[in-house]
Length: 319
Image 1 (cartoon, rainbow, N blue to C red):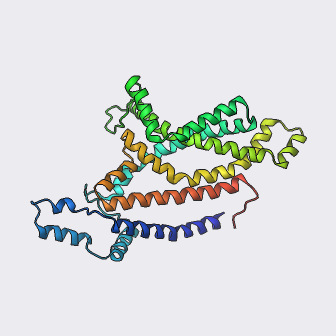
Image 2 (cartoon, rainbow, N blue to C red):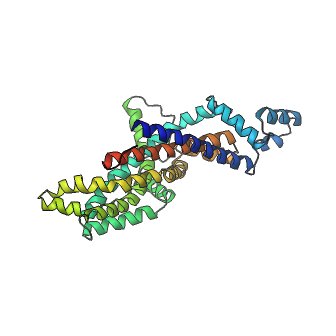
Image 3 (cartoon, rainbow, N blue to C red):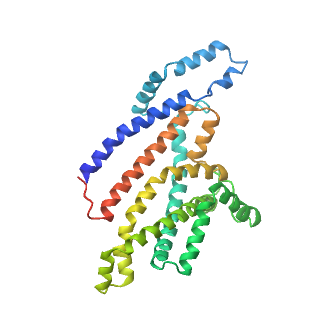
């Protein structure tokens, strides 16, 4: 296991290097200039603008700028935001806990919906419960997150007045009241992402369980007189979870993409909204830092999925 983990971490290094090269090249060749506002400001002399660009290396060739960026990254320096003049790593660390909390809670909610509903529907195929679950799941993943977000705002914030529709960071309460206010304003973003993912995963869990439940070892377990709950949990669900784990790991990029939209709707101060703001202002260091963090998270979750395979299926060995 340790050798496999070390090998995967070593493989991740060239993967991240290649991703960083592509991201940096695309951003360098993209239209737009982060100093466009300075160029149109008559109060800033041209020589000052030229000196500022030269000090930041904006006029250097792309490969020179990339090497300079990579060297700084290896030393733990992510650069400074062109807009706020704050170090990029500080901006990301300020926003990352909120994004991870919202996305992590939404994925837990999605699994709590998909696993029991999908397994129960697969063990009773074509029943009334199965038909209702399939219909609701089809509706759930057919509706985009921005549409369901607006519906929840209209229902719970405008008509009922139960939940705030704008995520606030300047809550003046302390203690339990602070946690309660944070929980209330996190409910709708978590529900939007969790219900969307849960609907998609429900159909996939149902399909995976149906494929396993017809296998010979399940029939053999029934012939030995084992109870249906024990057969379902020990012989069906565990084997059916292998493709589900793969799906969850591969969908993490789309989950972060959906979180960007959701954060914009509810004004959640996460790295998704930070990325949108940086793109609108051509803040290249922030864009590079956020997208690089996304790439690291995707590789990390794929590694976690590979490690879970061995726990789910004892036939898989790490060599």
